Every structure is written in C-alpha cells, then in structure tokens.
Amino acid sequence: MISQTTRKLLPALAALSLAACASTHGIAPEGTMRSADRLHSERALGNTKLSNVAWPGASWWNGLGDPQLDRLIKDGLADAPSVAAANARVRKAFAQAGLAEAGIYPTLGASAQESHIQLPETLAPAPIGGKLMHSTILSLNFSWAPDIWGGKHAKYDAAIGQARAQEVDVQAARASLIQNITQTYVGLDQAYEMRDVAAQDAKRNAGLRVLAAQRVKAGIDNQIVLSQIISAEEAAHQQQKAAEQQIVALKTTLAMLAGQGPDYGLSIERPNLNTPAIAIPSTLPSELVSRRPDVVAARWRVEAASRGIDASKADFYPSLNLSAMLGVAAGNLKDLFGSDALLVYGGPAISLPILDGGRLRNQLRGSDADFDLAVAGYDQAVLTAMRDIVDAVQTARALDSEIASAKASRAAADKSARLTQQRRQAGLATQLDVLNAQKPLLQLDQQIKQLQSKRIDAWVRLNVALGGGVPVNEAAVSTAFDKKNDSKGNPQ
Image 1 (cartoon, rainbow, N blue to C red):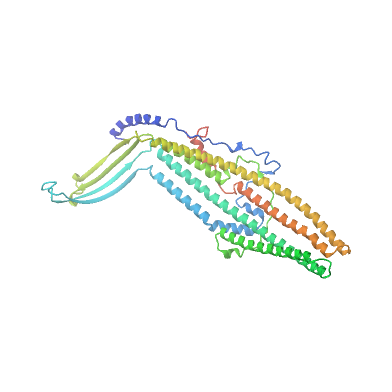
Image 2 (cartoon, one colour):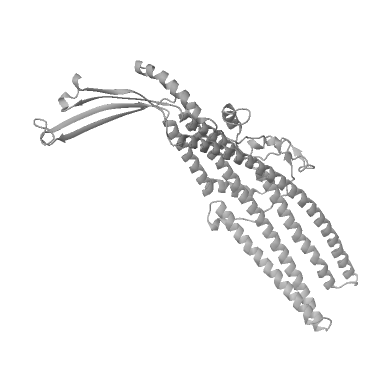
C-alpha cells in the first residue's frame, strides 16, 4: 500500500519528470539498420547451382568423405581451449546480467549490533559522563527503488543482449575451430601428394642420371649434361624431404587444434578427400542473417545497445526510493524485547538531477554512439558474409576451369609419353626420350593437385561463409529488437 505521504509526493514526482524530459532534446542515434536483401548478388553468383538444401548441415565436413577428419573435429570440439574460453565468457556475461537483474527487486537484510561508549566528563557531566554505556540493536532493513521509468529493466535487457551475443560467439568459435582443422587437413593431403610427385621426379632423374653417365662414358654427352641431371635429382630429393617435414608439422598442428599432445598427431593417417560440388542456397541472402553466428551476435549487440539508450534516458527522470527499518534497541538484553524497545524508521525519498555538469547528456550521447557502432558492426558483418560467399564461389568456379585445362594438358602430355614409349619399343626413340617425356606429366600432376587442394579449400570456406551449420536462431533477437524500434530502425 502507498502511504498518504507518498501519494502527496506523486504529483511533485510527475511535475519533475516533465521537466526532466526536455533535457534529452536533440540527442538521438544516427545509425539505421538495413536489410541484407539490398546486397544484390545475382550477377556475381550467376551460373552457380542453386539448391534449397545448400545451407551447411551440422556436420558439413562429412561431404569430404573422410571419417578421420570427423574424429579430429569431434576431439577438437571436446577439448579445444578456444571453445572453453568462449563458454567461460558466456557464463561471466550471464552473471553480469544477473547482477543487473538484482537491482530491480527489493532488498531485505537483518542486522545485529552491540556497541559500547563512554563519554568523558569534560564533555558530558555525570551521571552520563564517565560511565560506560551499552546498547544492543536488532533490526530488519528494507530498501526498494521502484523501476518507474523502466531504466533498470533496460539495463537488464542490455546485459542479456550482450550475454546472448557471447552465447552465439561460442558457436562462432566452434565454426572457426572446425574451419582451421579442416583447412589444415586439406593442407596435409596436399603435402602427401607433393611428396609423391617429388619422389617420382627423383626416381625419373635417377634413371636419367644412369643414362647420362653411360652417354658420357661413351663420349656422346659431356659432364655438363650429367651435372644438370644430378642437380635436378638432388632438388627432387630436397622437395621430398621438405614435403615430409611439412607432413610432420601439419600433423602436430592438427594435434594442437584437437586439444591433444604431439603424440596424437602420430596416429593421423594419410587423408582421403573428395572434391564436393559447389552450390548456394536459393534463399540467399535473406536467410543469411539467421545462419551466420557473427551476424546473429552483431544483431544481439544492436539490441543490447538500444536498451542501453533506454537505460540512459531513464536516468534523466526522478527516482523514488523506499526504505524502512524495523527493530528493537535497548541498553541491556532484558529490556530488548519490551514494548518500549521498538525502533521504526522509514519513508519515501525522491531525487532528481538538476545540475550535473552535462554528465547525463554525455552519457546518453555515449549510449547513442554505442548503438551506432553496433549497427555499423552488424552491417559490416553482413557485408563480410556476402563477400566471403562470393569470393569462395568465384574462386571455386575459376579453379574448376583451371583444373579442367590442366587435366586436358595432362591428357595431351600422357598421350605424348605413351607415343614416345611406343616409338622406343619400335626402336625409333631412346629410354632418355621416354624419361624426358615423363617430366611434363609430373609437373602437371603437381599443378593439378595444388589446384584441387585450393578447390577443396574454397568449398570449405563457402560452408563457413554460409554459417558453418551452427544452430543459431535469429528469430528471438529479431522479435525482441522489433518490439523496441520504430520503422526507421532507431530505438524509440
């Protein structure tokens, strides 16, 4: 029940609030959220297969067809410090939201105090002066500042928005870890292929060296030709050793990404990867904002910033504080619970800032700037998402063309090598001609594998750009945001 005194104060409270409203005049955010559908990509993504199921699934990397990669990712998600750190940040953010929520509710506390005092006779004459006096106080203390203008609820909502953003950041950390493991695994596959090509080239040069030595001995060739072949053979051996070293390093990296020790990497076998086809969703970009964890997190931060503006505006209005104390006090314990020992204190208090040196207006300007920053961050996240998608698709298309050309060149080189072998069998060419005809084949094999690795990497980047299959839901933040914003996208 509101006391008679409080009722008398309410008209004054209303009058003061009207005076306070004018102090926010001229302060408003400048940022405006824009739809992702404004980012047209029809021409840039033309001739790319559209699919209703092209959004990555929760285990999109299974499209590479390697069970070992699935095991590495599962181990990484279970033990990676980056994911654990992101989870800890979420817990801290929700704890901070809980602190903000606690300010909404009344507080009730109990206290017990015993004190002793002796005043000097020079200050107070006897019988008070010079006598040690005792007092005991038992009390219940009640305090409540009603959230009349919604400022405390706005602070709580802002804290919840930040916590939700941190929660989505966990999914972003998981997606980043999956991307790093997958790309490193693709690099390991390429390193194995480079080692094979180098070993084949070393074997070919070894055959050339034997033939060249025989030709030098027979006086057909000179030492210059032999030295060049020996140099090429050593270079192939060096490439083979470099590839083997890279294999070891990449296995160690995969072990670290999986949250394991270096010995874990020794159990990693040679990858066996497919090259999946490229396709994009038919609902791009309208659904992108609900698929990318960084975009969803940015949207939550916009919502949090908008509620921060509400909280800053509420500080301009008068505040009402209700407090009460009920207890007993006496000079000795036997009188403590008598009717004469009752101690009561309480009543409402109203406060309103009048001269604060511009603190509240600058605080509101800061909240508006935070909102503008959050909107800019959201817009940038959407732009980055579209750039990542277009870049991955265009890269994949270019690589598909390069791979087709390289395979056509290899087919021609293979035909030439087979014809040379046939000529040798017919006595029209030498073994030296056969070995020389194999060199373009090895070079093209190396080129094709490098292109295929880049092509798989483009597919990986596309899946990550499309959200990485993480289970985020933008609907909740959209509903919360739209309730508190006008049609222009600014906080009300």
